[in-house]
Amino acid sequence: MRNRAIVAALVISIVTVILAACGGGKSGSSGNEKVIKSTAAGDMTVTLASDTGEVKSGDNDLILSFADSSGKTVDVGAASLKFHMPGMGSMPEMNDEATLTTTDTPGKYRAKVNVEMAGTWEAVINYQGPKGTGQASMTVNAK
Image 1: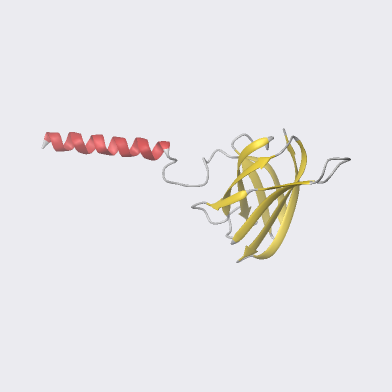
Image 2: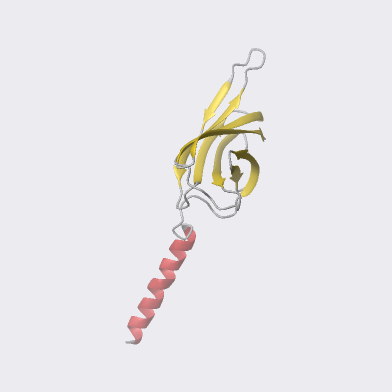
């Protein structure tokens, strides 16, 4: 009987360590996001965040979320995120599309995007679903 208790405790400990290493089974974020920027979209607030609180040149893992006036996330259905920089001189315009995946929290998306260069970008967000169809944009600086 004592051996069973030891084995059970060992199994529980291993499962706990694995869940902690994998984020406790929650997909989508570490829970330590720092806001990069927020903007209004209709009666919602759209927020872009990351672990560092900034967008950088190169690969980025971001969190895009939609919240109501009380701060509760709201499901907007399909969403997209694009980083746009207009052409300047001989440099053509750039459009870096993010790949969005849903998380366990409706209205919160994980965004993976490669931002081509440092500078000022316009983050363009589109959504279509239970909250209607809409668009928002915000200026962000990639470092």
